[in-house]
Amino acid sequence: MVGIRQQRQQRTREALLDAAATVFAGHGYAAASVPRIAREAGMSTGAIYANFTGKQQLFLAMMRRVVEAGAASRQRSADKTSDPVELIERMVTTWTSTVDGAPDVVLLMAEFWLYALRNPPHGEAVAELLADVRSNLATNIVDSAGVTDPALAERIASAVQAMAYGYAMQRLIDEDSVSPTQLVESVGWLLRGAVPGE
Image 1: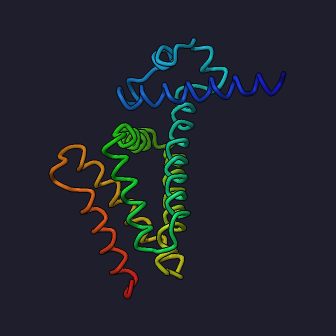
Image 2: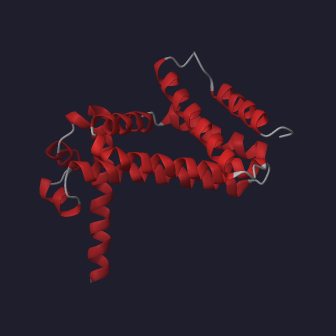
């Protein structure tokens, strides 16, 4: 009986996170409200408060899920090949496909940055999630390219992260200005410059 209740609660939580993603992407953090998210989920505001302390915790939990989904996607790419060039191409192609096929992810990342900038006391939570992304990149991309210096690995991961997010914003505004192939090529340039011989 307890298991069934937990499963139901987990389904409710996932439905609320789905609704939150839709509302935050469509209206932005400031314009999103607990009642609006509850309506989107087809639930009461009480369901939200039974699972989250409020809008802020719901937003951060939703973004944690986005970040974890990205990490899982990169891991799946890493599991399919041990060739560093192919791995980089797979990971970057996964990101470019996300940008084109699920642009709400980019909108949510933009809201994430704006939230951190407009709410300095809570910026640390955002910084930690972005650091998790960099750490994952360093493990799955940079280590495969033969980088042994942890400080260099972190710098390369930061550059790849910035390049990927910049590409996403540019692509959504003007898709003709940059292509998926260009991002793959640019990341290759970066790695070859940082790790001669790769």
